[in-house]
Amino acid sequence: MLLFQIQPIPRDIPLPLPLPEWILISLLIISFLAHILFINLMLGGSVLTVIFQIMGLKKEKYDKLAYEIANTITVNKSLAVVLGVAPLLVINALYTIYFYSANALTANLWISIIPLLIIAFLVTYYHKYNWEKYKGNKRTHIAIGLVATLIFLFIPLIFLTNINLMIFPERWAEVRGAFSAMIFWNVIPRYLHFLAGTTAITGLFIVGYFGRKSFPFEERLSDFSREEIKRLGYKLTFYVTISQIVFGPFVLFTLPWGSVSWHLIGVVTTAALIASAAVYFLWKEIRPANISPGKYFITIVLLLSLTVLLMGWGRHVYRSDTLAPHQELMKVKTEAYYNLND
Image (cartoon, rainbow, N blue to C red):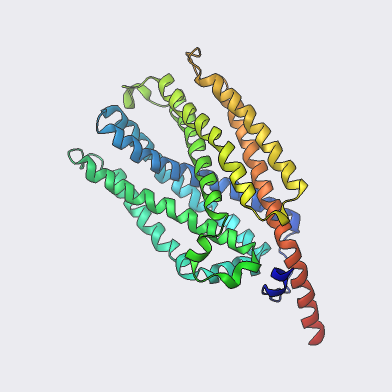
Protein backbone atom coordinates (compact mmCIF):
# COMPACT_ATOMS: atom_id res chain seq x y z
CA MET A 1 0.00 0.00 0.00
CA LEU A 2 2.86 2.37 0.83
CA LEU A 3 4.41 1.70 -2.58
CA PHE A 4 1.17 2.71 -4.28
CA GLN A 5 1.15 5.93 -2.29
CA ILE A 6 4.69 6.98 -3.20
CA GLN A 7 4.87 5.82 -6.83
CA PRO A 8 4.51 8.45 -9.56
CA ILE A 9 1.06 8.55 -11.20
CA PRO A 10 1.43 10.44 -14.50
CA ARG A 11 -1.49 11.36 -16.76
CA ASP A 12 -2.10 9.07 -19.70
CA ILE A 13 -2.07 10.22 -23.32
CA PRO A 14 -5.72 10.48 -24.45
CA LEU A 15 -5.24 8.96 -27.90
CA PRO A 16 -6.99 5.85 -29.22
CA LEU A 17 -4.94 2.76 -30.05
CA PRO A 18 -4.34 2.24 -33.79
CA LEU A 19 -5.76 -1.31 -33.54
CA PRO A 20 -7.87 -3.24 -31.02
CA GLU A 21 -5.83 -4.03 -27.92
CA TRP A 22 -6.03 -7.82 -28.32
CA ILE A 23 -4.58 -7.56 -31.85
CA LEU A 24 -1.71 -5.40 -30.61
CA ILE A 25 -1.00 -7.82 -27.76
CA SER A 26 -0.95 -10.76 -30.20
CA LEU A 27 1.34 -8.83 -32.54
CA LEU A 28 3.64 -7.93 -29.65
CA ILE A 29 4.03 -11.52 -28.50
CA ILE A 30 4.48 -13.04 -31.98
CA SER A 31 6.73 -10.30 -33.39
CA PHE A 32 8.89 -10.28 -30.26
CA LEU A 33 9.37 -14.05 -30.38
CA ALA A 34 10.32 -13.85 -34.08
CA HIS A 35 12.80 -11.09 -33.25
CA ILE A 36 14.27 -12.87 -30.24
CA LEU A 37 14.77 -16.07 -32.25
CA PHE A 38 17.32 -14.38 -34.49
CA ILE A 39 18.80 -12.47 -31.56
CA ASN A 40 19.39 -15.87 -29.96
CA LEU A 41 21.00 -17.26 -33.11
CA MET A 42 23.20 -14.18 -33.54
CA LEU A 43 24.29 -14.15 -29.89
CA GLY A 44 24.62 -17.92 -29.54
CA GLY A 45 26.52 -18.10 -32.82
CA SER A 46 28.95 -15.42 -31.63
CA VAL A 47 29.60 -17.22 -28.35
CA LEU A 48 30.08 -20.62 -30.00
CA THR A 49 32.33 -19.15 -32.69
CA VAL A 50 34.74 -17.89 -30.03
CA ILE A 51 34.54 -21.15 -28.05
CA PHE A 52 35.19 -23.32 -31.11
CA GLN A 53 38.00 -21.04 -32.24
CA ILE A 54 39.68 -21.53 -28.87
CA MET A 55 39.20 -25.30 -29.22
CA GLY A 56 40.60 -24.94 -32.73
CA LEU A 57 43.97 -23.88 -31.34
CA LYS A 58 44.50 -27.57 -30.55
CA LYS A 59 42.24 -29.24 -33.11
CA GLU A 60 41.92 -27.48 -36.45
CA LYS A 61 38.57 -29.08 -37.25
CA TYR A 62 36.91 -26.91 -34.59
CA ASP A 63 38.33 -23.80 -36.24
CA LYS A 64 36.57 -24.85 -39.46
CA LEU A 65 33.34 -25.34 -37.54
CA ALA A 66 33.78 -21.89 -35.97
CA TYR A 67 34.17 -20.39 -39.43
CA GLU A 68 30.96 -21.99 -40.69
CA ILE A 69 29.03 -20.74 -37.66
CA ALA A 70 30.55 -17.27 -38.09
CA ASN A 71 29.13 -17.17 -41.62
CA THR A 72 25.61 -17.38 -40.19
CA ILE A 73 25.98 -14.57 -37.64
CA THR A 74 25.70 -11.63 -40.03
CA VAL A 75 22.61 -13.07 -41.72
CA ASN A 76 20.90 -13.70 -38.39
CA LYS A 77 21.94 -10.21 -37.28
CA SER A 78 20.20 -8.60 -40.25
CA LEU A 79 17.01 -10.59 -39.67
CA ALA A 80 17.08 -9.74 -35.95
CA VAL A 81 17.33 -6.00 -36.70
CA VAL A 82 14.51 -6.02 -39.26
CA LEU A 83 12.21 -8.12 -37.09
CA GLY A 84 12.91 -5.90 -34.08
CA VAL A 85 11.01 -2.97 -35.59
CA ALA A 86 7.51 -4.42 -35.09
CA PRO A 87 7.72 -5.25 -31.34
CA LEU A 88 9.39 -1.89 -30.68
CA LEU A 89 6.51 -0.04 -32.38
CA VAL A 90 3.83 -2.13 -30.69
CA ILE A 91 5.23 -1.82 -27.17
CA ASN A 92 5.43 1.94 -27.71
CA ALA A 93 1.75 1.99 -28.63
CA LEU A 94 0.56 -0.28 -25.81
CA TYR A 95 2.76 0.94 -22.97
CA THR A 96 3.78 4.43 -24.02
CA ILE A 97 4.07 6.03 -20.58
CA TYR A 98 5.84 3.05 -19.03
CA PHE A 99 8.29 2.38 -21.85
CA TYR A 100 9.32 6.02 -22.24
CA SER A 101 9.62 6.49 -18.48
CA ALA A 102 12.03 3.53 -18.28
CA ASN A 103 13.97 4.91 -21.25
CA ALA A 104 14.27 8.32 -19.61
CA LEU A 105 15.49 6.85 -16.33
CA THR A 106 18.25 4.88 -18.08
CA ALA A 107 18.81 7.45 -20.82
CA ASN A 108 22.60 7.39 -21.19
CA LEU A 109 22.95 3.62 -21.30
CA TRP A 110 19.77 3.20 -23.36
CA ILE A 111 20.98 5.54 -26.12
CA SER A 112 24.40 3.84 -26.04
CA ILE A 113 22.77 0.81 -27.65
CA ILE A 114 23.07 2.48 -31.05
CA PRO A 115 26.87 3.06 -31.03
CA LEU A 116 27.40 -0.30 -29.33
CA LEU A 117 25.48 -2.08 -32.08
CA ILE A 118 27.40 -0.24 -34.78
CA ILE A 119 30.73 -1.20 -33.19
CA ALA A 120 29.66 -4.82 -32.69
CA PHE A 121 28.42 -5.16 -36.28
CA LEU A 122 31.60 -3.67 -37.73
CA VAL A 123 33.82 -5.88 -35.57
CA THR A 124 31.75 -8.94 -36.51
CA TYR A 125 32.14 -8.26 -40.22
CA TYR A 126 35.86 -7.61 -39.78
CA HIS A 127 36.24 -10.86 -37.85
CA LYS A 128 34.32 -12.83 -40.47
CA TYR A 129 36.02 -11.49 -43.58
CA ASN A 130 39.59 -11.60 -42.25
CA TRP A 131 39.65 -15.26 -41.24
CA GLU A 132 42.51 -16.16 -43.57
CA LYS A 133 44.43 -12.98 -42.77
CA TYR A 134 44.77 -14.05 -39.14
CA LYS A 135 45.49 -17.70 -39.87
CA GLY A 136 48.95 -17.33 -38.38
CA ASN A 137 47.77 -15.20 -35.46
CA LYS A 138 44.69 -16.97 -34.16
CA ARG A 139 44.82 -15.51 -30.66
CA THR A 140 44.44 -11.98 -32.00
CA HIS A 141 41.59 -13.12 -34.23
CA ILE A 142 39.88 -14.76 -31.25
CA ALA A 143 40.28 -11.53 -29.25
CA ILE A 144 38.57 -9.60 -32.05
CA GLY A 145 35.65 -12.04 -32.05
CA LEU A 146 35.49 -11.84 -28.27
CA VAL A 147 35.10 -8.05 -28.38
CA ALA A 148 32.02 -8.34 -30.61
CA THR A 149 30.63 -11.18 -28.48
CA LEU A 150 30.97 -9.27 -25.21
CA ILE A 151 29.15 -6.28 -26.72
CA PHE A 152 26.41 -8.57 -28.02
CA LEU A 153 26.11 -10.06 -24.52
CA PHE A 154 25.84 -6.65 -22.89
CA ILE A 155 23.16 -5.14 -25.17
CA PRO A 156 20.38 -7.62 -24.20
CA LEU A 157 21.12 -6.81 -20.55
CA ILE A 158 20.36 -3.14 -21.29
CA PHE A 159 17.11 -4.05 -23.03
CA LEU A 160 16.11 -6.42 -20.25
CA THR A 161 16.85 -3.77 -17.61
CA ASN A 162 14.51 -1.32 -19.34
CA ILE A 163 11.73 -3.80 -19.98
CA ASN A 164 11.95 -4.90 -16.35
CA LEU A 165 11.99 -1.33 -15.04
CA MET A 166 8.91 -0.28 -16.99
CA ILE A 167 6.63 -2.70 -15.11
CA PHE A 168 7.63 -1.47 -11.64
CA PRO A 169 6.61 2.22 -11.40
CA GLU A 170 6.94 2.02 -7.61
CA ARG A 171 10.70 1.57 -8.07
CA TRP A 172 11.22 4.52 -10.43
CA ALA A 173 12.04 6.94 -7.61
CA GLU A 174 14.94 4.69 -6.55
CA VAL A 175 16.66 4.71 -9.94
CA ARG A 176 19.86 6.70 -10.24
CA GLY A 177 20.91 5.71 -13.74
CA ALA A 178 20.81 2.45 -15.66
CA PHE A 179 23.20 0.52 -13.45
CA SER A 180 21.03 1.05 -10.37
CA ALA A 181 18.11 -0.44 -12.32
CA MET A 182 20.33 -3.26 -13.53
CA ILE A 183 20.87 -4.52 -9.99
CA PHE A 184 17.16 -4.95 -9.28
CA TRP A 185 16.55 -8.35 -7.69
CA ASN A 186 15.11 -10.10 -10.75
CA VAL A 187 17.22 -8.69 -13.61
CA ILE A 188 20.16 -11.11 -13.41
CA PRO A 189 17.95 -14.22 -13.02
CA ARG A 190 15.98 -13.19 -16.11
CA TYR A 191 19.24 -12.56 -17.97
CA LEU A 192 20.64 -16.00 -17.09
CA HIS A 193 17.34 -17.59 -18.15
CA PHE A 194 17.62 -15.74 -21.47
CA LEU A 195 21.23 -16.86 -22.03
CA ALA A 196 20.33 -20.49 -21.35
CA GLY A 197 17.50 -20.29 -23.86
CA THR A 198 19.83 -18.67 -26.38
CA THR A 199 22.31 -21.54 -26.10
CA ALA A 200 19.59 -24.19 -26.38
CA ILE A 201 18.12 -22.66 -29.54
CA THR A 202 21.57 -22.28 -31.11
CA GLY A 203 22.31 -25.95 -30.43
CA LEU A 204 19.12 -26.93 -32.24
CA PHE A 205 20.03 -24.57 -35.08
CA ILE A 206 23.37 -26.40 -35.48
CA VAL A 207 21.49 -29.69 -35.87
CA GLY A 208 19.14 -28.30 -38.51
CA TYR A 209 21.57 -26.09 -40.42
CA PHE A 210 24.54 -28.43 -40.67
CA GLY A 211 22.47 -31.59 -40.68
CA ARG A 212 20.41 -30.73 -43.74
CA LYS A 213 21.13 -32.69 -46.91
CA SER A 214 21.83 -29.58 -49.00
CA PHE A 215 24.73 -28.44 -46.79
CA PRO A 216 28.06 -29.32 -48.51
CA PHE A 217 29.29 -31.22 -45.48
CA GLU A 218 32.12 -33.20 -47.04
CA GLU A 219 33.52 -30.02 -48.61
CA ARG A 220 33.40 -27.72 -45.58
CA LEU A 221 33.46 -29.97 -42.52
CA SER A 222 35.16 -33.11 -43.76
CA ASP A 223 36.85 -33.73 -40.40
CA PHE A 224 33.44 -34.27 -38.82
CA SER A 225 30.67 -36.70 -39.60
CA ARG A 226 27.17 -35.34 -40.04
CA GLU A 227 26.03 -37.50 -37.11
CA GLU A 228 28.82 -36.08 -34.93
CA ILE A 229 27.68 -32.51 -35.58
CA LYS A 230 24.05 -33.41 -34.93
CA ARG A 231 24.98 -35.07 -31.67
CA LEU A 232 27.03 -32.02 -30.68
CA GLY A 233 24.07 -29.69 -31.29
CA TYR A 234 21.61 -31.98 -29.55
CA LYS A 235 23.84 -32.33 -26.48
CA LEU A 236 24.17 -28.57 -26.24
CA THR A 237 20.39 -28.16 -26.36
CA PHE A 238 19.77 -31.05 -23.98
CA TYR A 239 22.11 -30.00 -21.17
CA VAL A 240 21.22 -26.32 -21.35
CA THR A 241 17.49 -27.09 -21.38
CA ILE A 242 18.03 -29.24 -18.29
CA SER A 243 19.69 -26.22 -16.65
CA GLN A 244 16.39 -24.34 -16.97
CA ILE A 245 15.20 -26.49 -14.06
CA VAL A 246 17.35 -24.11 -12.02
CA PHE A 247 17.03 -20.87 -13.99
CA GLY A 248 13.26 -21.06 -14.55
CA PRO A 249 12.21 -21.30 -10.87
CA PHE A 250 14.97 -18.80 -10.04
CA VAL A 251 13.21 -16.26 -12.27
CA LEU A 252 9.76 -17.11 -10.92
CA PHE A 253 10.74 -16.89 -7.26
CA THR A 254 12.53 -13.55 -7.68
CA LEU A 255 9.42 -11.92 -9.15
CA PRO A 256 7.30 -9.84 -6.75
CA TRP A 257 4.63 -12.36 -5.77
CA GLY A 258 1.85 -9.81 -5.56
CA SER A 259 1.41 -10.10 -9.33
CA VAL A 260 1.97 -13.85 -9.68
CA SER A 261 -1.51 -15.16 -10.59
CA TRP A 262 -2.83 -18.69 -11.00
CA HIS A 263 -3.14 -17.87 -14.68
CA LEU A 264 0.61 -17.25 -14.86
CA ILE A 265 1.42 -20.38 -12.84
CA GLY A 266 -0.80 -22.43 -15.17
CA VAL A 267 0.95 -21.07 -18.28
CA VAL A 268 4.44 -21.61 -16.83
CA THR A 269 3.59 -25.13 -15.61
CA THR A 270 2.21 -26.11 -19.02
CA ALA A 271 5.34 -24.75 -20.68
CA ALA A 272 7.53 -26.72 -18.27
CA LEU A 273 5.65 -29.96 -19.02
CA ILE A 274 6.01 -29.46 -22.77
CA ALA A 275 9.71 -28.65 -22.34
CA SER A 276 10.06 -31.89 -20.35
CA ALA A 277 8.67 -33.80 -23.32
CA ALA A 278 11.24 -32.08 -25.55
CA VAL A 279 14.01 -33.10 -23.13
CA TYR A 280 12.84 -36.72 -23.36
CA PHE A 281 13.15 -36.71 -27.16
CA LEU A 282 16.51 -34.92 -26.93
CA TRP A 283 17.74 -37.70 -24.66
CA LYS A 284 16.59 -40.28 -27.21
CA GLU A 285 18.66 -38.46 -29.86
CA ILE A 286 21.90 -38.31 -27.86
CA ARG A 287 21.88 -41.72 -26.20
CA PRO A 288 24.83 -43.88 -27.34
CA ALA A 289 22.56 -46.55 -28.81
CA ASN A 290 21.23 -44.05 -31.36
CA ILE A 291 23.78 -44.22 -34.19
CA SER A 292 21.79 -41.98 -36.54
CA PRO A 293 20.39 -38.95 -34.65
CA GLY A 294 17.82 -36.74 -36.33
CA LYS A 295 14.63 -38.79 -36.22
CA TYR A 296 12.91 -36.55 -33.67
CA PHE A 297 14.18 -33.17 -34.90
CA ILE A 298 10.79 -31.84 -36.06
CA THR A 299 9.12 -33.11 -32.88
CA ILE A 300 11.69 -31.34 -30.71
CA VAL A 301 11.41 -28.10 -32.70
CA LEU A 302 7.61 -28.11 -32.38
CA LEU A 303 7.68 -28.85 -28.65
CA LEU A 304 10.27 -26.17 -27.90
CA SER A 305 8.47 -23.68 -30.17
CA LEU A 306 5.26 -24.25 -28.19
CA THR A 307 7.24 -23.87 -24.97
CA VAL A 308 8.66 -20.54 -26.12
CA LEU A 309 5.22 -19.34 -27.24
CA LEU A 310 3.77 -20.14 -23.81
CA MET A 311 6.70 -18.43 -22.08
CA GLY A 312 6.09 -15.36 -24.23
CA TRP A 313 2.44 -15.42 -23.24
CA GLY A 314 3.35 -15.87 -19.57
CA ARG A 315 5.69 -12.89 -19.85
CA HIS A 316 2.80 -10.76 -21.07
CA VAL A 317 0.44 -12.09 -18.38
CA TYR A 318 2.86 -11.04 -15.64
CA ARG A 319 3.45 -7.61 -17.22
CA SER A 320 -0.29 -7.05 -17.60
CA ASP A 321 -1.12 -8.15 -14.05
CA THR A 322 1.71 -6.07 -12.56
CA LEU A 323 0.74 -2.87 -14.37
CA ALA A 324 -3.04 -3.22 -13.97
CA PRO A 325 -3.32 -1.46 -10.54
CA HIS A 326 -1.09 1.40 -11.68
CA GLN A 327 -3.01 1.75 -14.95
CA GLU A 328 -6.24 2.09 -12.97
CA LEU A 329 -4.71 4.83 -10.82
CA MET A 330 -3.43 6.58 -13.92
CA LYS A 331 -6.86 6.33 -15.56
CA VAL A 332 -8.50 7.97 -12.56
CA LYS A 333 -5.95 10.78 -12.49
CA THR A 334 -6.30 11.36 -16.24
CA GLU A 335 -10.10 11.54 -16.03
CA ALA A 336 -9.93 13.91 -13.05
CA TYR A 337 -7.51 16.19 -14.90
CA TYR A 338 -9.63 16.46 -18.04
CA ASN A 339 -12.85 16.88 -16.06
CA LEU A 340 -11.22 19.73 -14.17
CA ASN A 341 -10.17 21.42 -17.41
CA ASP A 342 -13.44 20.99 -19.32
